[in-house]
Amino acid sequence: SLLNHYYCKKFIMGTSRLKSHNCFSTSITKQHKNSKQESTHETKIIKRRDQACRSLLIQVHSSNSYKDLYNYCLQFGDISSMHHHINDQQNYILVEFTNIVSIKKIMSSASFTKEDFTPVKSSILWFRKGQIRLQKSNQKKVSLFVENNMLPNEEKRTNLLNDAKSISGQIIILYEMMKLTDLEIRLRFHTAHHLEQYFSRLFENIKVLPFGSSINGFGRKMCDLDLVLDNITSRLVFHSKFNNNSKRYETKDFLGILADTMQYFIPGILNVRKILHAQVPIIKFCYNYTQTECDLSATNMTAIYMTELLNLYGEMDWRVRPLVIAIRAWAKSQKLTCDSPGHWITNFPLTLLVLFFLQQKKILPSLQLLKLYSTHDDVRYTENGVDCTFLRDINKLPADYKYKINQDSLETLLYDFFEYYSTFDFQTYGICIREGVQIRKPSRSALHITNPLETTLNVSKNVNVCELNRIISKMHDAIYMLETNEFGSNNWGIISLLKANNDNENLKKSNTTKGQTKNIEECSEDSYKNSYEISDKFEVSVEANI
Ligand code: CTP
Ligand code: MG
Image (cartoon, rainbow, N blue to C red; front, top):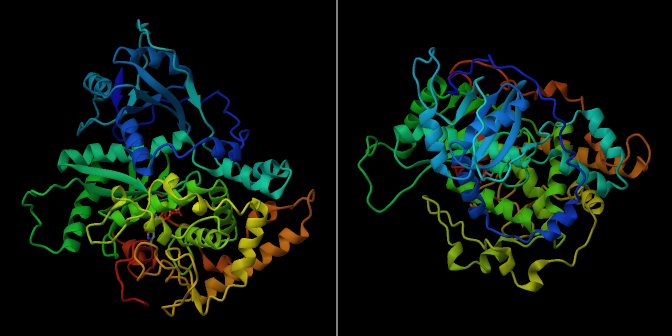
């Protein structure tokens, strides 16, 4: 009954009649206070990767097929969880088995459709209609999880924000509305696993790791998925085909081959674009089972450790993530950020601005302090020798450094954020998370935000004066709106900050690539060659503007 997915043929249709949970009821403050940092970021990643290895994404007729599928799957072993996922009006169930052996059994029992011309097994399957056979099992009943993974439209969002009692309450509601759900995180790790399965048939010891906002806790629903290829190395290394070439050409050629393979052989991958001549070569594609835009790069460990650092800052105080998400949402609706590359600020440097501001408020410590208290377990270097050592376990910070003195509300922090940067002397000073203090600007860039792990680099060197002025001007507007729109009025609190801004249409910042289903093309590379996204994203060049 189970069929391998291959070039998705949409013959199974159906709609869900299940209602989603109301996810806004729990108080994040309580959640955060109750949950101590029970495991490190690294162990969480290991757990999520393991979960993905034990999971299959199975397309079903409708969510009503759940009991039938549950019974069918029981013959292969115990099931830990089942999650309902709807994509493009198709119904899927993400089945997590307790033991990986079950996956092996089920994979060998699944078949291909007659139309498959290159049958390759994957962890995405169809469940065909068939006779229901009840399985005898002692396992505890597993119910179907149903989560709302859709972002509410502006009207619904406004209604929900209107129900809040304060601006702080609005920020929490917004955060709960926008943050990634457990299912979305599972699906992101499953996507990485799906790719890894294919690549590991071509290359030994290859890993596909998610990073960026999908896992640092600052991601919003439907945000892009950043993926990096990594391989497990030991002291003895096999001679390889590209040993004599420069590393850069090696990566470029390698990614070029992978891009073709992905386009033609991996189910669910559409619209592959090779951006190979950029500072850091990447493959862009759309993952059709979740409608997610993905960026795949090769060996970029600094970005992985940066994700870990950002996640750590997010864990340190319950106000960090809601504040960052609110400011990211404000910047998006004011068109200060957008999906395509250009002279504007992106979410990563914007997040660093918020973290730096929270350092000034004594809510977050400097990176230098985290380095000072690091232990030998925390020592990490990248392949290029970048020191990524910092304390991973925040419980090991001395009591005086836990910065619980500042108890400002989210409302105060939001207002003060706008005030702090709208009066900041960007001409003279730069932002330095590493030191936790402003520094004299070492470059002529309009905005200087030192890369915390590679301090010779500026993560916002693409931002021009015009864009910086726009940011400052929008901050002044935000202050004005917060001061004038009184509680109870139509636009009170953050509602006015999130109203879509339709001026600056001439900037043509709409994302032109999303949703298209083109074949592999090198042409889009031109728009990236001279663009700043890549140099901003993973700066390799040290000399530019420094
Ligand atoms: N990164 C980095 N150095 C940069 C840019 C990015 O180390 N100059 C790392 C950061 O860890 C960042 C990740 O790469 O989180 C992904 O970058 P990007 O996709 O631009 O930012 P996200 O935080 O993922 O935000 P978004 O939701 O907009 O994708
Ligand atoms: Mg990203």
